[in-house]
Amino acid sequence: MTQMETALSRFKEALHKIKALNYSSSMLFWDASTGAPKSGADARSQAIGVLSGYQYQLMVNPQMDEDLNVLMANLTALNEQDRVMVMDTKKEYDKMTKIPMDEFQKFNMLISKSSMVWEKAKEQSDFQLFKPYLTEVIDYLLKFAAYRGYEGHPYNLYIGDFEDGMTVDALNTFFDELRERIVPLLKRIADKNKVIDTTFLNRNFPVDLQEKVSKELLAMMGFDLERGLLEESVHPFTMGADIDDVRLTTHYYEDDLASALFSTAHEGGHAIYEQNFDRKYQGTPLASGTSNGFHESQSRIYENNFCKSRSFLNFWFPVLQETFPEQLGDVSADAFYEAINRVEPSLIRIEADELTYSLHIMMRYEIELGLIDGSIKVEDLPQVWNQKVKDYLGIEPPNDAKGVLQDVHWSEALFGYFPTYALGSAYAAQLAHYMSKEIDLDGCLSRGDFEPLTKWLNEKVHQYGALIKPNALIQQITGESLNSKYYCDYLEAKYSALYGLN
Image (tube, rainbow, N blue to C red; front, side):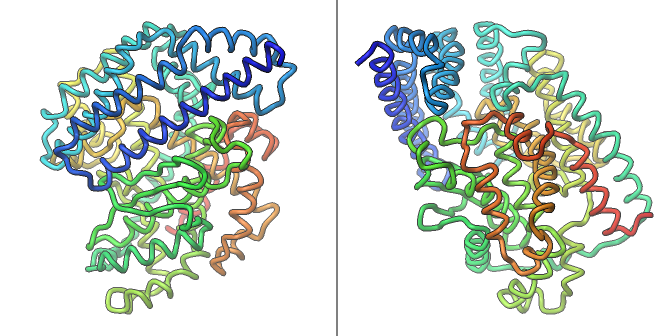
């Protein structure tokens, strides 16, 4: 074997072992989130810390450094798959080698425990329980930013970790563009004073029937339940441990039918992406989404563009009526569509309608910037949060659980993650626009036929995994870069029709 072939063989073996350790860590996280004894939190965090230490050692060592240097010097001799894996790993290696191993391990132990503390703090609606953990998380992020080095705002590092090439300046422009069109639309809707009844959504819906309908929806969308699992957790999430082991959760409320159904549709979009990477990437780092924004586009396109559309709800509502005859027997399909899509400021991000959702994201983005640059102090966070909710949405959180503690992300140090939710909605609208040029989108949805839609996404998006970077991928599919125009056009058309705006 040549020097390059030997280096490539060792490199792939190391990545295979890292993937196996990731799988083990994922199982611990899954158990912790879906009913494992809370008393085991310390033991799990210790185990995760040990596993993360082994991962670090496999990634950061003299042999990996030598092999990466050999492979980087021979990129043109590698096939596309290997070339992308080498370049991505080199980028990750350079990032990790600037962080001391003992601190990296302690950081992973911290976020494992802080997630458990966040859950308890949310249950008790007490930010003070979570405050010291969040303070420590932010201290680590600032320390790691100094180790890694950055240009411009330190937040550029963290948004870049989730959305390759994105910066604070670009995000500011993006959110400014959304604000210019969405805020006036919200005002026009408010001025219309149209009353939409949603009370029937809060009747008593047995959890076992909600679970049944949720699994039926997943299968209809194209998620393979033979290679996946749906469970319940406090905060819905998706975990793609492997192409053949994709797990997602939802949360059932007996007095809120829409919550579980549409969080299932949302997480189902993520899960379908995870199940449909090209099998040649299985067991490699390329078996993942190309970016968080693109991953979110798959959840948003299924949840909003597909499952909340008038065409699909006209098809699906009779099925729901049959399952819940007492609760929905006196409701019309039009009333159900309007209730599901009603615009109303909400305290809870994951329950927000499509229009106000972007305001929730902008608020969190501004807070994250402030926490990272020091203009917002952790101890002031509940007050800052409540004021921003009042300023953006005109309502006030009654407690921490419905305010600053509602999201799990900061407990897991996922700073830079929130903006990708808004980017995902914009990608989704752009993809749906171009999909409709090739497929009768409304016709398929009116028959509950997701197969052509999921197949289109399989071919255009899913199969590539992380091989093609986000901007190159949206260019390949649509012939242009991410363009928020399609998102704003979609919202204006949908909600102008719903609210009878001129």
